[in-house]
Image (cartoon, rainbow, N blue to C red; front, top):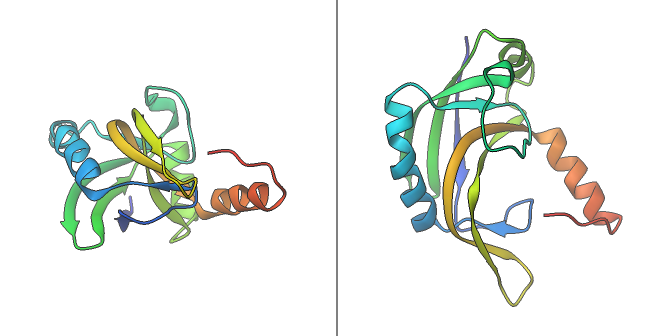
Length: 144
């Protein structure tokens, strides 16, 4: 098993044209802390759009979150599962992503600002998926 600690940036425009304000993320993480403390904060590799984390797709377990000036550090351990072993192959080519339900508002510049979120999972997104998003944007196929 491998430990992965990365910074989740807040208050900046991300690859999905969204801004996650630190106070909104802090509130959501505070609510999610009980799941982390219970050892049930499973995450998956990649973007998923369902409202659960099936064990068959779990790749890591979130163990700790700490606030830092630029956002939050998130620490997880890879699992001994097919997706966990796949995650280990990505080395440092991943970033954390919050999957949840919530609200957004559109700013004057067209960016989307998160107003609230209930976290379903904290997933690890391969940076290659970010490149695909960037390619769709460049070709005029925008999705957020």
